[in-house]
Length: 305
Image (cartoon, rainbow, N blue to C red; front, side, top):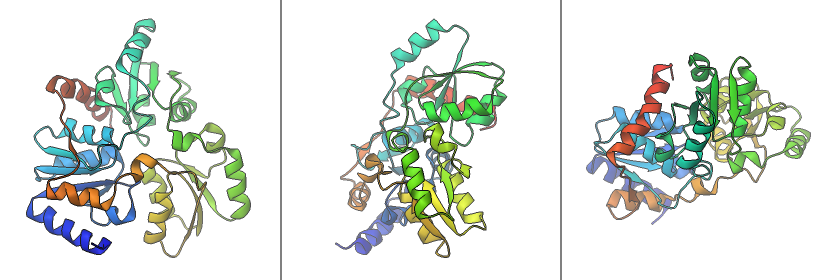
């Protein structure tokens, strides 16, 4: 089967079986092309909750499929490749956070959306990279424990000096391994390009950026900017997608090593097999876990996320 034949078969099957396909922006181009919705993880979960389809396939990583299930318990949620995890989401466990809150009475735990459903059960508020500043600013409490990404946490802490934000060491290995040498090399090769980076990058890299924002924020900035050249400081698939969507502009990866292997493990054949009913993994959550995990997402919505 060719790529095009597989894509056509997926489009046929998803219509026949009433399937909604979600693809995170870091997915391969051939998967993006057959998805019903693409974007960041929380935005995809909201889209899934709003559609009538009874089956949802998440082309992303495990915590994203769990978030879909938290918001849509009545739907069958399939993770397209069961091996697709997220090292950052799995860095901390429930016991560690319970110990931290016991040692720091009165602190509220703010969890980045990139966390497991179990970890969310002991967190007070959930945030995304684009909403974190707004949500934490709206919280009445000043004493905050932010998990798990220390780089995003540092970015927010610098933005909100009035809040007492405690950081815990953790983060995205794909973004965190990029350093100043990568920035210097990219800027020397492309001196006229603007540098757009994700807040999961280390602070030294952020300081060199012309724009800092979420994956969707980076894409929107590049599309709407009058500039014609950009260095993209997030997963390299975004460079590829922007080249397709803005053929009149030039995009360069900040580093050839900015690749999330967990995202790249999902293939078009995985998606096809999910549609055929013989692939992927159905995500199930005990109802008590789902309800407890949903509370911190509800709090995010309450505070304007």
